[in-house]
Length: 219
Image (spheres, rainbow, N blue to C red):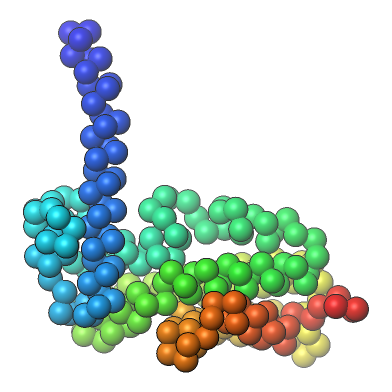
C-alpha cells in the first residue's frame, strides 16, 4: 500500500505537467489558426492536427471550440495561463506603488501596449466571431468590453490618487477616455495596419493620456 501511495505522489505532478504542455500546444495551435483564417473557418480537427494531438484530446485539455477561443483570449490578455488577476501582476503592482504620476502614466501605457501586442489580433478574431450570432460568442465579446471598462476605472483611480485630473475632466470622463484608449483595435490598426512600431504606439498612448492626466510641472 505504501508503494502504491508513493507511486501516486510521484506520478501526479508528472501527469499535471504533461496536461499543461498539451493544453499549451492546443492553445498555441488555436491562436495561430484563428488569426490565419478566422474563428468560423477553423475547426477542432484543424486545431488537433496542428497541435499534434487527437480531436478528443482538444476537448479534454481545453473544451469545445468556443471554450478554446475563450482560453486563447485569456492567455493573450494575461500573457500566460496562470490564474493571477491583472492587478496582482508585477507591472500592475509597480503602477500602484509608483508615487510619481508621470512615471505611473508611462507604466499604464506600457501595460496597455503589452496587452495590445499579445491580444489585438485575437480581439479582431473575437469581434468577427461575435457577429456570427452565437450567443456565447457575443457574451464573450461583451465580457471583454466590460472587463476593459473595469480596468480603465482601476487605472484612473490609481493615477488620480497621485495627482489631479486635467481641469474639466471628471472621473467618469477619464474612465471613458481611458477605456477608449485601451481598446485593442487601436494597436491593431496602427501597428498591424499602418506599420507603427510598438515603441511608437506606446509613446502615442503616453501623449494621449497626458490629455486626461496632467503631469507634474517641469516635465
